[in-house]
Structure formats: structure tokens, C-alpha cells
Image (tube, rainbow over all chains, first blue to last red; front, side, top):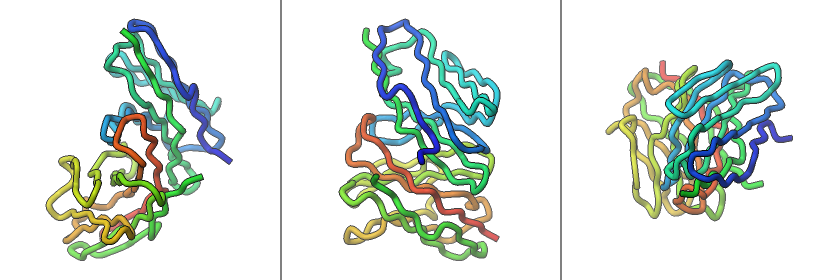
Length: 109
Length: 115
């Protein structure tokens, strides 16, 4: 089965709106990471968040282990936020990494 | 679905030795990547590779590192010589295109332990 389910698959916003991206997981984890995929394919790590809430500028990540979910919140979205966002779970039983399928975000001016 | 295979899953070597990490990417993919994750830290980009060339590399991609994909076989990451700080899990990824909308497929990683 799929260890990580990411939603929504795609999201279209007007500039200034907020975005909420979700990852739900079905296994126990050591950590959850959120990435932004740049043009060219390389990933930029946004958050390394095993549990709790972390903030970075307009971004907030919240991981609630007992509810088996992690979210990425983008406030006051900008056109430059457009792109693919990925979550990745590190499974506690064997330290393997599982990625979600990604959310493609489009922010319109 | 498409899979990226990494061989071996765990490698233990002595400091100063050479090591080659092997990645069998998705069969029709043309873009390849290596990432490094030290235990307890975030995953970080090392390098991407296309058409026989390194397209982009990070500061973590030291002179001791090299990548190649000879004759369409494994995509490899070679470290020569290894250092203690090279101990980490190395993830390979591949994609069919270079853009931000092209999905990366990741392997499960090779854990490298340098003693």
C-alpha cells in the first residue's frame, strides 16, 4: 500500500490567497520533510519536521503524529510560489523514505 | 509503478577507500539526481545529470565525488577517497524531464557507513 498520500494533486489560487497542502501517512515515522521542486528538478528542503509546528516566513508546517498527518500552509501566496511541493516520510521501522505524489500549485496574478 | 532501484541498500567501508553507489533509474528517464541525508538531518541536493553531463551541483558535491552513467547502465555516484563525514543515506532519483512539473521518482536509498 501507499505509505504517504498527498493532497490535493493540484491547486490553483489567486495571488494573496492561502494554500493548505496535506500529507497523510499510514506508518509510524521518524520524520516528515516538505520540499519545493525547482525548475531543473532539484529539491529545496522547506521543513524537516518530525512533530509539532515550524514557521519560516510565509510558510508553516504542522505534523501531528497521532493523527498521522502533516500539513504545509502558505499564507498570502505569490506567483513565485507556483511549482510542485512534495512531502517525504522517513519510516521508523527501517529508515526508508517514502514520497508523496506531490501537489502542483499554480498562483495566478 | 515505475521504480528506482539502489544497490546496495547498505555499504560499510573504511575511511580513505573508494565507494561506488549504484542506481538503476526508471527505464525511459533521462534526468538523474543524487541527494544526501545525514541521520537526523534534512535531505540535501548533491547533483543532477543529463546527457552525460553534470547540469547542476551543490556545495556538498565535493571534488572527491563523481557521477556517470556509462552506456545507459547504472547511474553511479563514486566517492574517492571517502571521509567520515560522507556517512549518510544517499538517495537517487530520476525524471523524464527537467522541469518543476516533472515528477521525481526516488529510490529507497543506500546507507553508507564510513569507519
